Length: 164
Image 1 (spheres, helix red, strand yellow):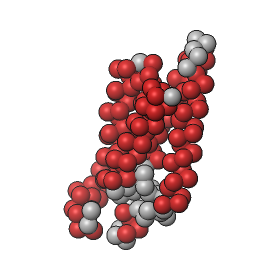
Image 2: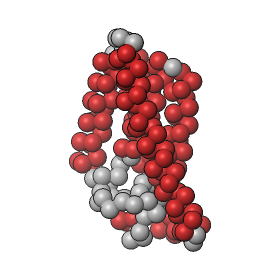
Image 3: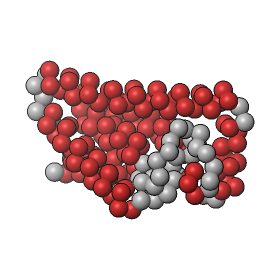
């Protein structure tokens, strides 16, 4: 993505403070909802003595750690760093953009839920796609960052829950 493309993509949001606030609010609401859902899901598994509980904790934890280490090593710059344009979403982290850990986490949680409840897992993937779009429009990730985050979450879930 070029600076001009990014500028065009975000100008519509930037020109109206209410749009900026709405994008930020939806980002916080989606992130909060999905990340609150995961511990509740684990609590349900625990209360039902479901043997899947241990895998539902270990697979995301191992994958999250691997993504975190990879991001630090690869250390891709964020769009607001490359283009010297302030992001719409509040963020001041430098580097560590690839892959998006927010998007990875949502898709990893979706795959975890999907293993037990297909419809809920699919719905979380839809919310994950919405969050990915928000992270790009908000200027904190490039499209490749969120696509890689989603694919990493899906592949990690397939390997952790269906292959191993």
